Length: 373
Ligand SMILES: C[S@@+](CC[C@H](N)C(=O)[O-])C[C@H]1O[C@@H](n2cnc3c(N)ncnc32)[C@H](O)[C@@H]1O
Image (cartoon, rainbow, N blue to C red; front, side, top):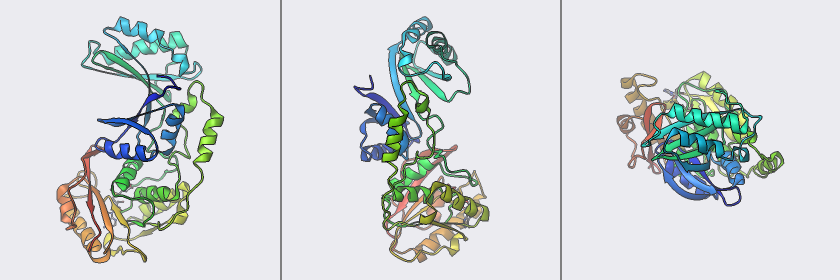
């Protein structure tokens, strides 16, 4: 594995959305090698590592596999970690931290494994090992095979870098983007979220419509790695900074909570999509379809167990369904919730739900309905 022959790059996915992320990666021109629980493997060199961080909306992190060797006991791990060519990837003036996991292996003590690698980094490379370091070396020992990876993202990728104001139960941007994708959103139809909270769906949709790269406004851990070419990275960002012409899209968000509406508008402003979006304070039963051709209603109502009272929630989902059935003829619907009963309470003609997706301790699913009659 070298930069020339291609690395193995692992894109982490929200569990349940591996296939959706693989689809996004393929569509963005990445060489997808396969899907496994928790992510998607693609092949490529440094350019793909950077580009994956910059353009993929659904990936949680971009991990770079830098090496693998067998390690049957700690002394062997120590020896092989010391011999590893860390300087090809890491700089001795940048601090790192090590995280290890062990599974079905003779080395079963993850802290002891991490310590061996930390010692190799300190003594062979000369890099400071610090708990709060931005750069993470990941050590995974499985079936006695030790795999070394670097987290090239640093701060997780759902932090786009421009969202400061969050509501009560914000949806992660990566999830929102993959759910939009699963609803077939291609940036050319209007999107309405009548319970928009901090505006995640509407802002993600607007960015997709405008062709804005999700990573355009943030830093990445790979900027700290050995051989990082800042000029080439700048050129790549510039090449992706040509917003496309938005046709047919406009994003409408509403929420009954005034604070949420203010936060969503501020987030859209910071993301540079204020001209493509409008947020207003409105109870869900007062939401109306905007003038013009139909599009997609994308909504993530409150769920039980997190905010709100379950009985009231049934009534709320009922009100949402009634509003959409009466006023959104021709619109498609994507609804994200943790309770099948709540989805049913809408009375909307949902197809079989999507896979179970873990989010904040909840098991959520996407419920889709075709154009409403
Ligand atoms: C789970 S949160 C949505 C989070 C949002 N997707 C985000 O990423 O920030 C549900 C939202 O529904 C709103 N809401 C609850 N009852 C409502 C109602 N009757 N009408 C409109 N909005 C309502 C809440 O204020 C809250 O912002």
